[in-house]
Length: 339
Ligand code: NAD
Ligand code: WQD
Image (cartoon, rainbow, N blue to C red; front, side, top):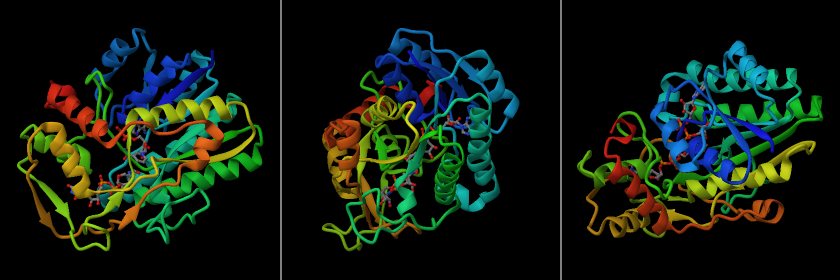
């Protein structure tokens, strides 16, 4: 079976994807520098899969470390999750974001070309659509200049992949635009473990639920949406992970650039999320309304029809499952992987 290198495989989405890859019969090799993850996740992945998944420590900006991986294993394809992802931090540290994300992806693609490994899947984001002109977003919706360095690294890497594919047509470039990944593996053994105070809604909710934070601040309740709070397409991380397997099954060894939205197609507001989460924990989750957060788009949700049509993939898990699984992970690991 094909061997897939999962760069950033110790992270939130990467760890869930390794499990689905192994379940689908792929061999995975994890490569990570632990800049935003902990080594403890590796043993948890092994526990869930019942296998020892090979791991090599390293940075995608290091040609030598990547060459060592490609020399050790016969890699058939790469899924690149390795990237920095905090919107606010990227505004303060733009060079670090371009270096880690864009230079890292560039070095990785260069080593892939050197080793004649032509199957690449990239973790892109709905952030490439900017403030949408209309929803739902299809893959044909315009890609816009991003409003933060993080988002712009996604736009730039997408273009770099497309240009390289034109120059080296053997490449199969798959650009997966994730909407808002939430939830955790049903075992409660792995999940999202952000450093410091979470920026994103779901980890903030889970930390309020276990008492690490007192209440949720809802950023803005005067948006032009049904209840005044912003609308997003939240997708269970296990569904998202399965989307990568479907993309590999479909695109492996094909020539071209393939772009897919990975979302559910349903938009939920922040208040909908609070309601679902309160149901999952069996009590009202405390929240307060706070001013709008700079840079937030009003509503963003996918038209996922292309992925269903071409990959045979569809997100199946409900909002209640997303909330219950997120809470289960946090309840079992109140301090994340430090427990
Ligand atoms: P994460 O931070 O949990 O995982 C990223 C992993 O990459 C971490 O384990 C980190 O240690 C590693 N890493 C970072 N830079 C590296 C480098 N230079 N070399 C080697 N390893 C490195 O993040 P995640 O939520 O799992 O996201 C994975 C990818 O998906 C990221 O590229 C992110 O931008 C993208 N994405 C995430 C979301 C989201 O909301 N979580 C949405 C859209 C896209
Ligand atoms: C969701 C909604 C907030 C926290 C970000 C990135 C995007 C992508 C996914 C990687 C918004 C509200 C949040 C809180 C709140 N990442 N909120 N109180 O902003 O849609 O997307 O993560 O590519 O690029 O921008 O996700 O979870 O931060 O926010 O009210 O404490 O929850 O205002 O409406 P977002 P999010």
